Figure 1 (cartoon, rainbow, N blue to C red):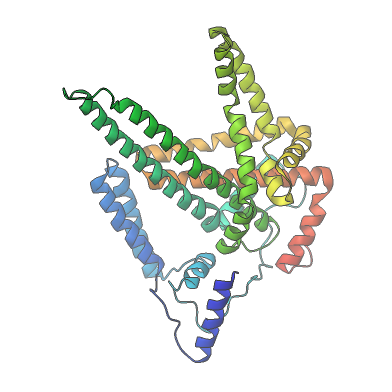
Figure 2: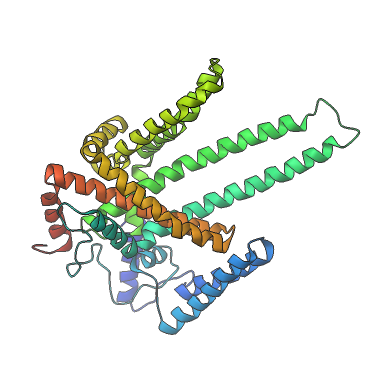
Length: 392
């Protein structure tokens, strides 16, 4: 809990002692948020092309608002903590939530031993479903903002392109004012802007998913503020790792461009599949490097080496797990087709996919360390200490 949260909690205790209500900006309930989502969705249905998708969201949000209000369903504890810190909801009077709640009555999400593929996927589902406000909520929020920026910027460039094409048909066009040159410069500026936003956003998404997953496996409470602050502290190191993976992904294209520029001709295309295959093999061996970087606080190069040493003995098994995970994309992508071009649905679906994949990677890392290093003894001790249990 940061200093602002502690100050608010201390002030709340003083007010409760005096029998006073906390000074709230607005007592925001869950049904308020769902009702606002329904209203915004109806407005989007009128203004956007994805009318059917937004109407579906508006109906679902409206029904959800009525349901939670009738059942008096409130925020989850971690969301309530954030809202209470900003004086947007009233904490439960007369009680003070401990910083580390006792979760002794809960079983760990994974067995602390070598796991089967089924146990890896079921463990990932348990972690995501229990901690969805953090694991899915934060990525979905970040992705929604990012997708909105991309969509609006593309629309602005499209409007500029229409204006440029209209100016070409003008008989008074001055040749020195070339609209195509301006359009190219605008596109390059847009590309740099998107990359500047995407890199830290991608790194932050990666870091918070790993941090939240590790806390869940170790028996620590997964709270929005704690996970967010820890992820931000590792963001710059993860940015360097993310750049490494960007370069690895672009390597086939860079090789092709280099060969063509050196006069290789169209025959250079034959080498592209082999380079792509090599990149795929390397991506499997390096796949655990982000987890190693965050969990073990290593550097980028050291994390890559560590990932190779862990992944190499189980390389074939990892390929099978990744291929099996790719099948999970199919039903999620079908959902997006039902709603059409809907930014909110895309953000939520991508948030679920990112959360599930990163949790699965953390569990793969945990499983490999249990097999090679008896990591289960450390996890059992951590879980017993953090959850207040004497044994698993």
